[in-house]
Image (cartoon, rainbow, N blue to C red):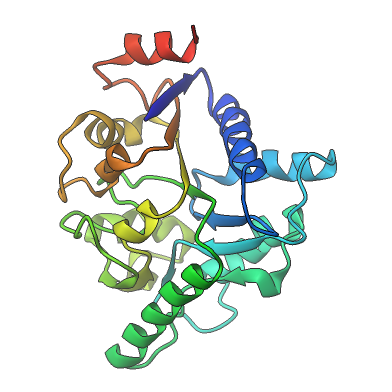
Length: 259
């Protein structure tokens, strides 16, 4: 794993965008397949990628996008469904065709319907040839996607209950904590690990403990993001505040400086 620590969140966005662009340039299919995270962490990265599109350095017109997760129970068109978020933040500014954006289906009214939709999502990813570059954030409790602590490290796309911590953290996007859905459909940790390149972005002091556990702690379901340690091509791009609890910071800086 490569760990890059930059001075500010703006620097994180710029450097992470370069890592994503390198991964997309190496994509093997007719059009690249991009894995998309939501939340605050990747917004700067998406803005940088939009700048690359405007500058002619990136063309996503033939690309396919797969979202990490989706809430269960929000009505179609609700502004906080991740489909609507990605239509606003990715499809429009990056030129990704809306019909080529895939989001887990959280509209099922029964567990059976949700389980079937999760299996179909796995099939769609496989049919697309797998994800070339997966963009990731990290929760303050170490969750990756909506894989909360205790998730199987080999899990596939499935229905999960959101932790109280996650619902509290996401309440800022809703009128209040009680309006945050209790369940989601999320790619599993095993699904995430199938992507050919992982790019994690994190900024701010509230992510420092989770980052330290994920990058330097034991591989454990207690910190789902620790599965990044298993991946052969994973890069974590952090600002100074998110890196404050890393024990091996000197080594990461020396490695980033190159030979």
